[in-house]
Amino acid sequence: MASVIGSAIEELDTPALLLDKAAFERNLGRMAGFFAGRRAQLRPHFKNHKCTELAKRQLAAGSAVGITCAKLGEAEVLVEAGIDDVLIANQVMGPAKVDRLAALARRAKVRVAVDHADQVEGIARAAERAGSTVGLLIEVEIGMGRCGVMPGEPALELARCIVGRPGVRFDGLQAYEGHLVAVKDRAERERRVWEAFAPAVATRRAIEAAGMPVAVISGGSTSTYAITGQIDGIEEIQAGTYPTMDWMYRELAPEFEIALSVLARVISRPAADRAVLDVGLKGLGHEFGPPKAKGHLDADMPFHLSEEHCTGRSVPDWPLGSLVELVPSHSCTTCNLYRQIHVHERGRVVDVWPHEGSGRPL
Image (cartoon, rainbow, N blue to C red):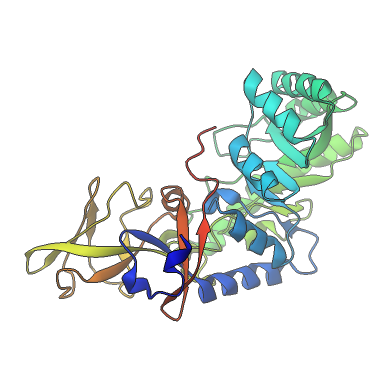
């Protein structure tokens, strides 16, 4: 893995996942700078890159209280790497998983989302057996239509199930406005995010009025951080995409730079206006659309992905064997397809970071 360090990126075999070091570092500094001195702080989401070295650099950049992740397996990777404050922003169910969760809580401060009393009971019993304490955030449904208990009395009742129960600690609420993160119009996005979080903040006040302290509301994203980061009552912002960026989030948060790309090679030119590259669905996250060519983001250059091919039309005169950097529409699912990322500066590979959290379904 270290053998490519110092080589020109043109010497890499393809497809290869690339990270522009300068753009990446500017992204970290820009986000940390926004939260400097604010009540709300950053809890970056590991799901974006699944790379512990990158997570450590996010923490070192400042204004971050810990790391968010989506899965227990990711939390284990983070703790193993020495990161000692981790939120699993998801529900953890099943005997084997709750035992692993309880064991992990002996080694670090671990929080997890819950939305049902049965989850609380299972985690509490496992933690009691393990001699640990797991922090719990009640996930409140604010319009995403996925997990979460309804705001108000249902969340209040669940808080009563947690408070005073051995093995668990009530730490607050989680609310995710995922149904709004891609709203194009910035003013509309801001208005709707404020409206969505109002019931979560009101639920917080009701729980506090009932005598149960709420340490935190955790939520937010890269496209809403400047909104959620200013709502009174929200303490943690789970922004994920900002260090790497993709073309979809770049349209929503243009203050951040695209740092991530996939290096691919032209393997066929079956027609004058058509080029086929050696990467496809198995190497590019495409939930929000096909990739775009770096340096040609605004060009009318449609790409089509099949399993192992990327076919571009109306492309420049790329000769056979030439290299093209593709910018995915979704960096989170792109990173998960690779086991390492090539960090480059001024055209040369300066480091290779493993993706220890990628490909971990558990």
